Length: 612
Image (tube, rainbow, N blue to C red; front, side, top):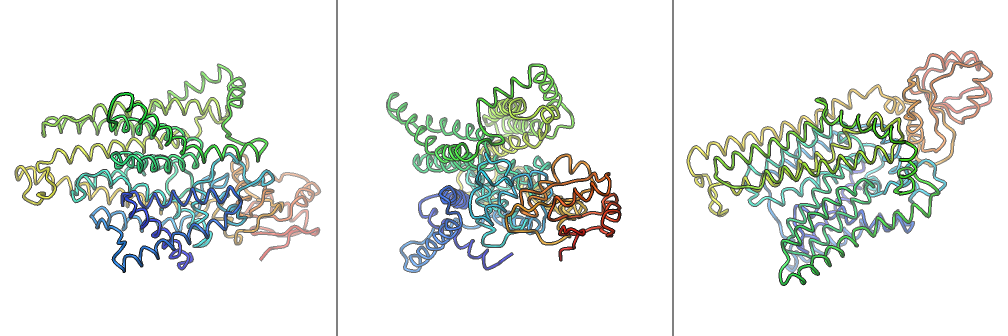
């Protein structure tokens, strides 16, 4: 990693942060606001075909703002307000650095990294433009590029590597996670602040199918939506800042993945509720104000996504996972009622399965909220809406179930839909969303249940009795203990996963030589002794990513005559053998009289020539 480039990038980020802080943005939302602003700016440059220029302009703009505020601060005319450090800040900094260190040494393994997410970042980094109709290396051309643009900017300065991409995405996730502390009434209270720290750590349990050492966005979507909801609450008395925040978060959400529409609906729904509660004046004036602000916010939010949809339709003749009513109707007609019934039956079986992690998460959220409601009602004699909240979250779960089922029957091939491919991964997103919502609301009402409500008088003596003091201290200690333990569990789990993956195909391929960074159409054969890797196209996607070509092919079966084997080999320009393949080695001896075991080779008329 280029440390000088990292400093350069960090200074630019600090410049945006200082500007937003001066404009009144919450310090707990400012870092994410910086990043989302840069994503949208990069998006505009990328759509205009000026991505590399945009990276320089966006970063230098941030550095310029930092210089200006530094000079003004020295002159006593523009000091940036400082919130101060709290205990949870130390948790975020310490464990965040520990996780970033692990991710910086993590390889990419998951299939979808090589089918789209990682190859998209590599394409943007080394070509400097969005893919076009002739760039066949990008299969899912309808997928919006928000996270890829963010990672591209980061690796542009620190150097391209799998670890750098993972760190970039983690920065976005960590900044969004930091926003939850903005809802705290009293940030000096360890009990409530570490309840949110524990929530962040527990949320990774439900992300176990993906973990943070992958570039998939199933965790990015809900945590960005959470930050959007936080902004609606924090800026509820500042309507223009609230509208700008929701527009920014919603626009980026829609540019992360098409399925983000569900999370945007939740965000807009909460915004509408907030606008109605804050409306003043006569009923007709309230109605016009609410509808006007909502229309302006949503209209601004969807413009970047509509631009992307226009780009996809005008650039590509067809695109995988494209939003199209005609494609959906054709898919439904093709599947038929019988297929839909079978998928629905499997869907229900999975929901009520005792092995379903998402179902366990739903039960956990409901139990915690109901038990908390009961304790606050009995012990503190406080009425809270936690039961209503649990019901509302259940409605969100049910609606998400409906949207997920619709995706299976409308967008997926039957072979994938009948196995509910990715069910737990997709459901983890809404579990994470509702987990954060429940925890933030619970933290608020736990604070209102404390004996002393005057924040200036809260100290070691501000308790109703020694019994309640001891209970508070024990609860705080348990929150700190489990927040640290759970986060370390995720760090150690990621480390363990990296060790277990040492014999996987991507790691073995990395041992054959350095990855290629010049985009080409070279024909590359990846020899893989595992039929599953080839049949699922995993080997082919990996070859495309690693050798940066759209002509990568994986093959396992070489049971053929020597003449047919020769013809097969001569179709390619390079052959990669990351793992010993007995049949391939035997056929090389028969056809070319060469002893080939592992390595990267150039194809010649007389056989294979090792590439050093």
